[in-house]
Figure 1: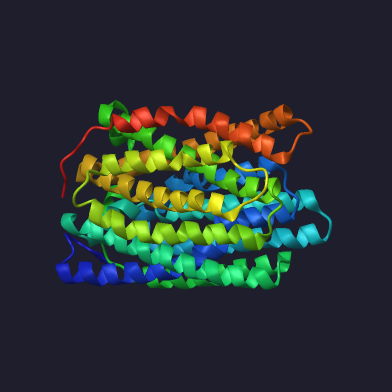
Figure 2 (figure 1 turned 45 degrees about the vertical axis):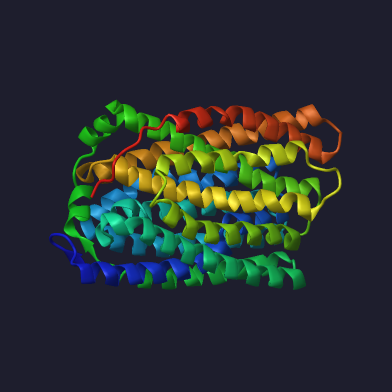
Length: 424
């Protein structure tokens, strides 16, 4: 429901409850439709490495659909926009699933096209739906509550992801056919549609709808000409680029470098989301004592650790060696996400949050997605030529070395982010 003026404390707490329930159910949906499952499907339909690199950037490339979310929000509000887009998002997941049928019919190229198109729509509608997610948190939580609300909602999300992953892992241990993966995707789409009905009960202020209807030109100029925001844009760009270039290719390197089964890959995904859930709770407490830009710096430094792991990776697969990599990856990604959101709320005036949020997401999300597509696929092809006919791991060692060199300047940029006092 949309209210004029600030929400009452009772309305805020009621909305927080539904927000938590949504994240709990959405975690089940997300994991069944998540990047790991989609990459496993891509490998099963014989997609080239470059296609997997493109898929790894789709979650950010989808931010190009943010203007659609803004337009819809200006008519129906932030909550209804997300509910509508969540239904369309999960319908798009069924398009991804349909790629298996075309592959079964020996139509590999159409199958890959459906996989890519469905994945872009899936992530695009997600981006359109959450266009007002940061300002909405500002609506349903007072300034002192925001760190706690973000921590609890993310912990519920990652916790349910963990449960879903456990179920998927047990299923794929028994049956690793492509049809089992399709069943997982269909189940996830069903959960996602149900989650949208829960989210519809969250309250919001009319300010979100009214702000979405205003022209963005002036606030965009503010973002461009603000030195602190320019630094924030480049810093988050590097964080997103690190996620795109390192984590999906780590899955690919394990799958094709060591010829691991889907079951073995999902064990690492379980570890990643387990540490994500735990770290989400810890960052809520850390946010009370440590500035978000410092948390972001530490998270980005941890995000670069896969470079070292892959440079010294053993020739023979060893679970004990790669387990810390995925534990660190889970902690780093959720810490970076929470810290970036917290830093945004501290650094941007309330009146400008809507427009700046869109501007920031397009340039740091879609921009990183486009760069990740080009750089990731280009590096994989280049490193394949370096490796020649040598063992598969050689190609991936070269890849992570070059990716690490490209991402290192982000350490300097994030280290120079200015500190801001909390805003209401």
